[in-house]
Length: 444
Image (tube, rainbow, N blue to C red):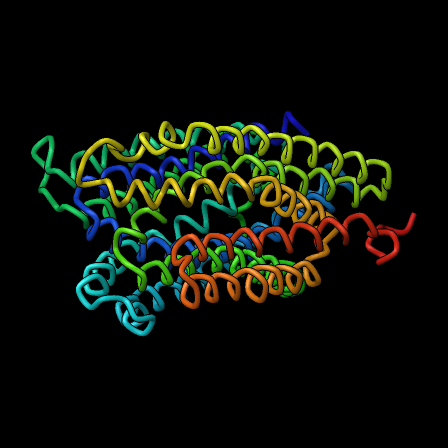
């Protein structure tokens, strides 16, 4: 589990750092620019994450086939082909939504000036949709075949490309035009295409990957496999949509409270999201390892894979909880100058939010790993309903009440986030614990 989870978690961490690069550069343009960028990225991230979750159904499908038979070349190729088809179809839909980003933001009560800048930012960023979702599919392929380190290396390349792109295009270095806020969006688009082509080159040149010919007969439909992708992947996408939507919705609530609160929320959420990438990587590994055992009808293997995942994922969050609790200013200094007078309000709010983020770290790790293990059993429908109830009924409801009906304001919104994660963690872990009673285990 550690061997598979470590490079996946590292790739997730690097991916978050790729996005953190955008925040670091845009934050130097002021609160208004950061608020516009954060709203745009909130919508874009929500779409891409849910899309990646839908095509991520390729992981349990391929793992189960390889668990049954280690040389399931044709079955893996069919799954990959339909996953890439789905990536294209989803991208067309999501780009249309991004094109209407300004209207969406105005409808949620954002200030017109912020909505105008954010809408323009989103119309550039939307061109990264397909390469990002397609890269998620290709990443699942290399990880399921036991080569997750490739994802780490490619994401490290993306980190370098995005840092260079932001440095040159936001501030006009090396003779490039000074595009300001919009330079960050252009840099993200370039980075996404670099990642996708890097995966394609590796897959086409590596002998172990090449034998699957995943781009062969690319126009041949496999409708049964397509339906399987939708059946398993749609609940995964809706689960991710529910969780990511909770945080996106929180950003919109913050936007109504104030620009400084939203900027502080953006920074604190970056820190919490960065920490989450480790248990998320462990959860991805759990899906693959549990899926392989599920395909082989190995009940003991299923239990051991999940137990290892819980120890790794939740154990790491004890560390992140401690860092956020005892050294919050040190963490924030990565993103902004905590001693600068102009950042005083932003830093003050971010420090308050980080205390709450520290408190929900364990629940965040537990719910992620439990969901990943259940996906390995191809159990996605009930966890979807659990997520919707936990994140939205319990979490977002609490955020709205405490944020707007009490004096807690932004702190109340974050308390709601903690409540949502805790409820989801308890229910998902209970479902995993009683997996035999629910009939989730394969018949020997």
